[in-house]
Image 1 (cartoon, rainbow, N blue to C red):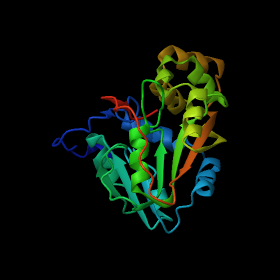
Image 2 (cartoon, rainbow, N blue to C red; image 1 turned 45 degrees about the vertical axis):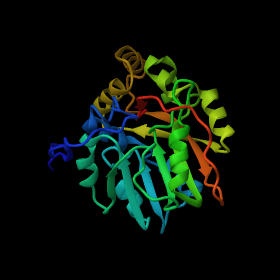
Image 3 (cartoon, helix red, strand yellow; image 1 turned 90 degrees about the vertical axis):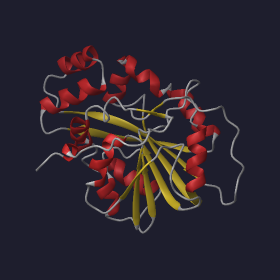
Image 4 (cartoon, rainbow, N blue to C red; image 1 turned 180 degrees about the vertical axis):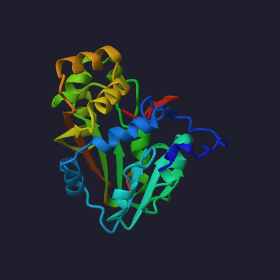
Length: 268
């Protein structure tokens, strides 16, 4: 089967001003495909996503869809699936996926859809890393604009306290850009969101795949130390947080917020 990333990438147009290329999927899309395939084999996370905001028969947006790995699975039940992605180099792979999803270039702060037009928005490790340095309110306001009254935003985030992946995060300086766990909880709570933990796992076909993904996601010494302490591992436990926010029934004035930074981290 030919690689999805052999297709010529578009070069015309400018990236959104709030876009910074993801150091994992943006630079290593084929390795990130292996990571996605290792996620949640027992469907614990998937069932929690359905329970939080069902999308069967509805229009769902995968915000920051990357190469579109999850688009066909959404399409199995949704009435319409739309992927939004700022990285032009990833768009051909997303558009080549099965399932008939529409894939558009855009970002959390610039969603190319009309207001009140979407039932569910998922953001999986994309854009929403709130901190003092990273103001995520502009993107949140834009998501609320496109959601229908009563529609749902579900943000899939890392649990920084539970699971072996959280242990790796605690050792990694690369994780600083995600923000601090307690501050993230407060940020979402202040905006009326409900946050729920979900414990799942990664399971790889081989130890070599696990090692390659860990070395993509973490500094070499952090990944190497973990692998040395777990010589037989082909997977690990992984804690997620689901932040669920429901669009208000009526029209609400947007929050006042700081101007967005010139670059926003796109992926975990």
